[in-house]
Length: 526
Image (cartoon, rainbow, N blue to C red; front, side, top):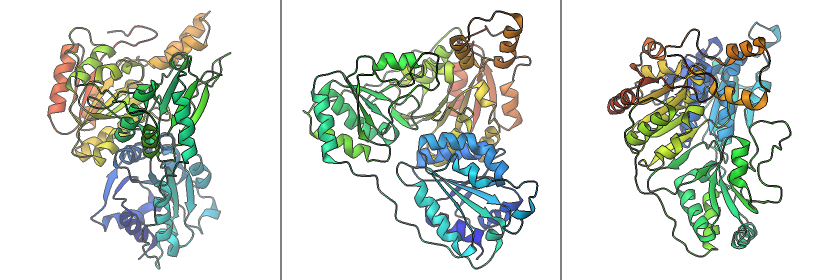
């Protein structure tokens, strides 16, 4: 058995059955090893950012890692943005990167680079395999590292000669480290703060945005009057009818500060103390009030569910209310972000996995879908756009019995549009809605907030050139059909509702180009 065969056999024994791959010459023995193992699924991706984003979506939904297969430093570099998002989501992910043979590296061939340094920017664990006899053990260690609470990117670098050399053997899975237990005095102190009667909120993140933790947190909130919040961009939020509602912290710092205004106690459960996404002149980065006491009930690597259940047991019993199913009316008239949201809320099937990279066009989505049947909501955790389409690919492969709806802004879609080809190739049940407002609308908003009114034609021209997505207009319906995905274009709310209902009713991928106006900046030409 060569090193590549030992790695594939070990990863399969550890539960890694899916590879999102864009290999090159240095990885051909890994490709051969995948060919020989019918129990694993190799998913081709036309860009490494699709492979890494898909592995993120798979890990979020499956709760165990998929593997990537990337070619040398440039391949890893192409995948870094979505590995950054996966790191912020605490997704378990095994990142396999091929390298030149060890005897070839000193020659400084054209593709030579410092893979280890690149990998460390997005990985919680990095190892370079230096002997074929260690390849199996290194693969087992990568899975154990990826699964270490709360989850992380584990990168294993495999030189080509390690992959092709004989003498390797598979290794058994390593024991997985459980979440850290919570000290009793921490729970007691938090309970006392919440019983004080002072204004308080609970901020949920990581595994605390799943149903078991949400129900326990809702009991705590009902018993104490504390507000229930979650991170601005949760990795996976379970929501909908029958589940406790939770308010997401605002993206804009002034919105978040308004939500936190007047608090004396902020309890963190699987979340970090909130900070603004960006710095603004004369504004602090910390969002909680200065006189607010920050209590960490459970860090991201702790057992958040157990912590919340113990906390609830220390408080008076109080039933938590959950919303009944309630859907918006079918929208009519102009197609806007608001009417798209109403249609999604009216038609969303039970068990849908919603991937949300709608950005400014999606501001109405949370309210419109709050009473829809139970569903999962995946968001842009690290802020590196181009995550939505690949994330949908991985989620659909992790949960083939569930529909996936990807709500995608047009500017972000262009970063990883190649994911549509993988959707078609794999026959994935994904409905993609592209909000075509022909603008980087979020940047129009930030421009207005950061830059004084333009005082000359040259500055106005630069803004138009850099933030405008017309001249020429992107034709997403044509682009999708060119990659094998059936597509349509909607210009009215009635058009969109009919097309969405049809796409949700039919298996396989579909794309709807929703022609909506931008929320900020110029008005889009018809």
